[in-house]
Length: 409
Image (cartoon, rainbow, N blue to C red; front, side):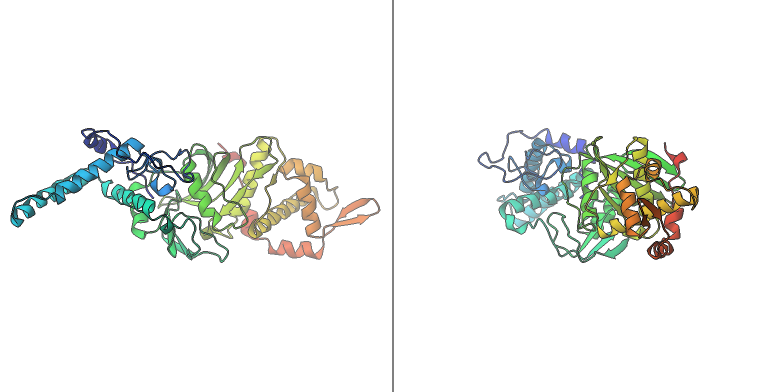
């Protein structure tokens, strides 16, 4: 859901006149831990509790402090009392007085546009404290995802991990991957509240309409968590991790006359000693079979070469991920053989140093396509029927979608 970021100064000025005495309960302790990055569990969005355990009640998620939540609770109470206060006047006078209160309330809401939205969130957070069983942390009812204006059906193995999700369709922003259960909330977010003019990271590659941004999971925890939650629904073999601070995310986008669109991404650990150059990779369903998977894989190996490391992707593979890597490794071997010629010696170590691909992955690819034949103590590269069939299935777009080294910034 969108953050409460606009007109906070106006709201703070209206709250300063209220007393700062805490109205929260002092005998309540939090059960569990709030999953929001950087949250200690202090405060409650409703302003009536000292701690919280649900992300729906997290003040930090709405860019508020626990003290501001307490003041806002007092502010809401004053507004309600000004409307529903009983007097000894007749009904006509009561109606007129209530009308004045409503007009004053509407005037305040026009000045503070996010108050209605914040009130609904606070009411929901308070309701979940009294009815915790109503909150379902996981749901398997989601059947469709609408990525802004493109709708597609989730695969059968998809697992939705969006909190409190009990709907059959989820709306997701294609740029920041914030999720919504209401179509109009997503449209309002994209048109009015959308926080990013580009992916929240450093531009490291620019080639015509394609760009790649490097996003630090520690600095952009919310964006990174939204991205990983979205990817988890399509990659069932990957384990979802709340801690995204140890990873970097490389976002591939495409620009057109309308704006920019996320094509795909891959992530890798920050650990310099890690033997893995890729932890998770995904191409958006709307851009499948266009060569972008091979582009991201090649990009990850180029980064490894720049770091002077020979790496391998993290296991286990998904079915689609294994197929994509096998196609890329096979295409790399074909390109190497074309440069060397059929009568030259096939040097696995040389190919590994040139491409950054681990020698075990090269050997595994040769075995997969029956390209190794042993004669005495020597191995020969042969053009097997399995290899020929695999070459015919290689997509021309995958072979033409290359990373331009000169476009790195």
